[in-house]
Amino acid sequence: MSKNGQKNGEQIAVDGYDFVEEIAYEPGGESIRSCHQCGVCSGSCPNVLWMDYSPRKIIALTRAGKRQEVLSSNSMWCCATCHLCTVRCPRGIEMPELMHVLESIAIREGLANHKVSAPTMQRTLVNAAKRQGRVHELGLMGRFFLRTNPLAALKIAPVGLKLLLHGRLPLRAEKIEGTDQLRAMIKEAQTIGGAEE
Amino acid sequence: MKQYSYFPGCSLKSTAVAYDESVRAISASLGIELIELEDWNCCGTTAYSSIDRLESIAIPCRDLALAEKTGLDLVTPCTACFRTFERVNSHLKLYPFLKPKVDKVLAAAGLEYHGKVRVRHLVDVLVNDVGVEAIASKVVNPLHGLRVAAYYGCLLVRPRVTFDDPENPHSLDGLLKSLGAEVVPFPAKGRCCGGSLVISNVDLALGLIRRILESADSNGAECIVTVCPLCQLNLDAYQGMVNSRFGTKFSLPIMFLSQLLGTALGIKPKELGFDRGIVSPEKVLAGHLQESV
Picture 1: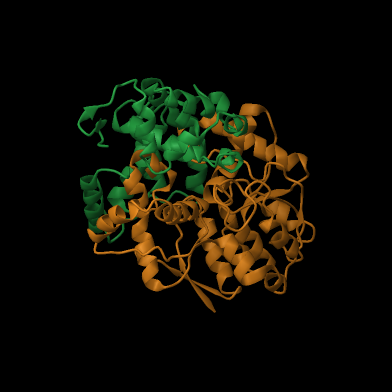
Picture 2 (picture 1 turned 135 degrees about the vertical axis):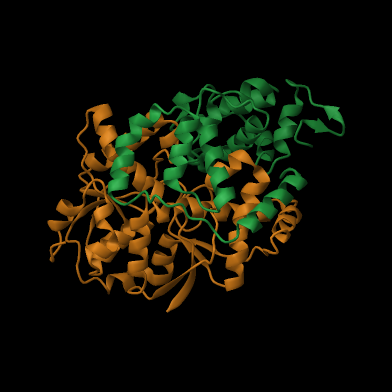
């Protein structure tokens, strides 16, 4: 399946049942078929109260083909990848991996919930990792708040200041020798076009 | 002296620099040699898998390819890096269709990876290679009943079982007891600190951090010991914010295992990065050590 939702030349219906197949093709996504809706994931999740839809509902909605609702929800962006659900799931589903699959599709198609800033956070971090080969935490925070809400930076400014004073936020960013290698790898990965089977 | 390929990760160069300093400081006394992986790149952590599925496997493979050439186990003190590399190895085994794709991406950098690198967390190496008995025999400055909450967090033990129980881990407990510490009951020991959500959703994360601090505090802990740079950052740097948000009065120093271990081994506090803690550990440690810190 290609990135624009085409499979064998057929356009996937926006709210069609093919959504579950689209997910199942991704490594980690195939487990969506084994869920029997017991809800242990939702009961284990420390962040479920912040989510538009609980993890169990995310699976139910995905299987019902509710592509738009799922991809634009805030649920996956509240997942901290703590994997408490994973180790308790009687069907061996790795829910955070499923959440990441949904996140990557939501970002790719510009559907990511605009009220949450986690997508910007993830993108800012990954861009730094790609460009420099290292993440510079001070630079990361600076860029993140500039792109989201600079005023929100005031809220955590005292934390940043304390870290600076304790020598925990070096001003200088590190860069690896192999940035050319990274560039070449990313170019090749984009040519291949995805991790799906 | 047993050699390992050492992967510090980005946090250990910045917010968790005390972790890097203390790990390096204790390694020689424990008979292990950590050789930093040359020109390592950021593992991409869980963020990368939200952005691009293939790159999230292939980019950390550059590190694994470099490590494979050394023929040594790859050890990292960072729990997030550990789990990222473990995920890559496990994905490559679980999804054979990924292998040719990853091979092609690596070939673009003139590299190859055969899936042979054994990825280890520092705790695994300390407990299973060095061994609790050997560590105990080197203690010169016992912690004399210091009441410690041993915090494991999430990714050290989940999702796949590597060396400890995923919900009720215990590997740190025995180690800390061998240093003379008293390990208090700590129901939140395997619960989540919020990780990087502390930046993107601070209100959510503060609630999680509060629950962990409360669990340690109400069980009489004088400090929390952690083995993850993100856990340390969240519990330490945001403790003040938790207090002002919830009207609590927590004052729990959050130490890396390597810092406490180094203290027990008689290494000077300066070398262990204690001055980098935002909630100062000085008071708590001073009451329990033979030598003043």
